[in-house]
Length: 557
Image 1 (cartoon, rainbow, N blue to C red):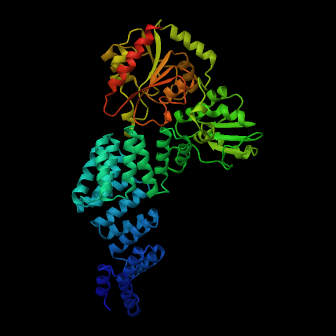
Image 2 (image 1 turned 90 degrees about the vertical axis):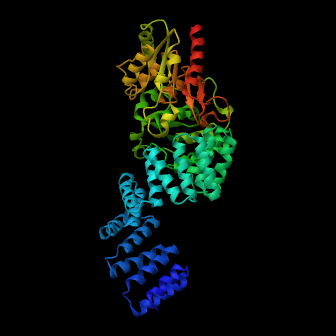
């Protein structure tokens, strides 16, 4: 039996005969490297990964000069979930054959699996250099460039991949994902529909279609797509989390909060890992101590703190761990609790063996906010320093008799899609034209150039108190904010802080907002009003509406 027979069997899909042929060869030629390697490939096809690795490593031992042996072994190691082990093997393949496009692609993929996208991009580009129509490399580049916010580059490479393989459902879904980043929802929907037409079981396309429906306010349709995607991939935490958010937005709180828990099983910015205590499941905590740890960003930590007073009535002792810059404000706001920074909380289990249960802050809502009726009315839950509030009222009075309005128009992080959810100061002309208003800067990063441009364009002086660090000194920022008559903001930490301290607050918003929980308002704050933009509108439409309301407010001041 010759090796050519074994190869022919393999190419015909007759894997059992190919395997038998290889064993027949090895009985006569125990050192036959090609037969060892083909046995490895066959075992890989059968997902017998450990056996495949043994055969492939044996073939390399018999003949260490064949680049394809290293390439195939590298691909196997990736499939085993060992990209770190695959990388040096694939580099060896490229030492032997630098123009080996498949090895370049596999090495790039292993680097992506190892969170080294920048280096991976180099190898995908080299693969395309040697094989310009290499669809898989173009697809991979499309994903990396989207992650790096090079959306034009992403679409260019994805289109080349589609030109090479117009029936690639995943590539259509990938293209839709890039259009989603650009918030071009019509193109997202078209790409997803094409992908699903080609592959009705492609969960990523179905989930993305659900996300597009979220952004368009078509929540019932979104829930249907999210359910389909989750049924196809029931262990995908991303899908289950997004399904939970959709259900929360629909007002289906019991189901929604269950789905919301999946945020802790996916890559969201959780501030601290779970502590070594049992997780609170809503049981009565009489006589017990609970540790609650803040999660995600400052705005999320503040929103979830709206539930902390409820806990102090449930438990003998509460320990609230938060970002260090929130500690002074929380200490004053929740005097009956112990407040620690997240960094200091690392040592709590050694110092406080009396802790009985723990909870992520966002997980409290499942037990404390099971219905809309469970949200307190007329609440503000953060307490600024009263002396400092009075100080800032005097400072503000020195600026004149006008209505004092704090403004924050964007996030400090405008990477990726953030820019779509925030207006630009240059779009605030209608607000700045309202007479009888003194605008106060609450933008918490370097915005001097933007304020200068606003002065030139609108002849408006937005007053900045340079002595306050608006980003780090949240206690003093809260005092200044409390002294204001109104805050107009994007839904940033500045706007959330204003609402949490009970200041009348207007948010200029766009896109999907689950926090309304099926109502017409964001339920977490009683002094908050939203002005919302659809994707078909320009920000000026929302700004004009807010300006009209501001004019009415000034007339009653």
